[in-house]
Image (cartoon, rainbow, N blue to C red; front, top):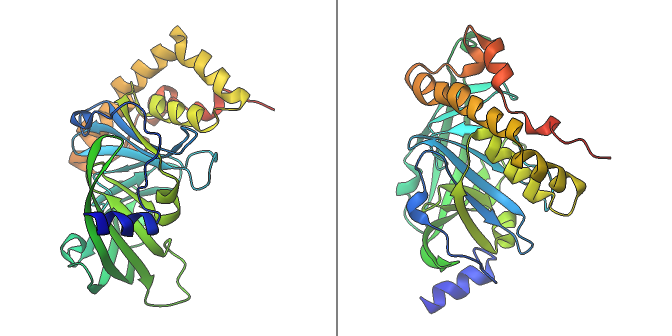
Length: 279
């Protein structure tokens, strides 16, 4: 274990310092639960929010203090089987062969990843296929912030050097948290936080306000989240859009933004990006 930990620290993977309250891993994958990876300044690096055991939204901050990427719906991270993102016009099934979790440590496999559009807009999108090489570097069990984590360190490389479709290089998939992050993101991780949020938008708002913790945006978001109007909006989103994704999307492949009564659902969308406008 000592040699393994030295390897991890040398690789800047999951080196925890100054951890705060021990995360409650029993919460994970339960409806309404979230997990965040935090940097040394307690700013989120990446996170998941679960709508149900089989459906979550995830987001990442590519750079320290940057606004989070738009929420991605999926069943899991490594590899995802279902993916959807309203802003990217993304809604499809992904098939990855061979089983990338079964590639032994130290071995490299040629992987094929195929994206098949589903839903009502499927005919307007194309089936995409990507081939690349994946090497399993290590599978490790380590304790971080008081939580025992199982992680897979791996590297991906294009078969065509001109291919820029993915973030190539070394990555780490934290299986316990179902979070797949880059080596650069892993190097910034200092703590883990778990908790609950009222809806997908509430999770996004909480994440964004933490990322911009030193900005006037954080103060504005804290005030908004404490108000009754915001709490009502969270409940409305939870009962409409989130409920649709859990019940209908998983069964039919149609997300709320593709269904007939889309206007009503757009009104229920808790768009945190417009709640606080700061100069």
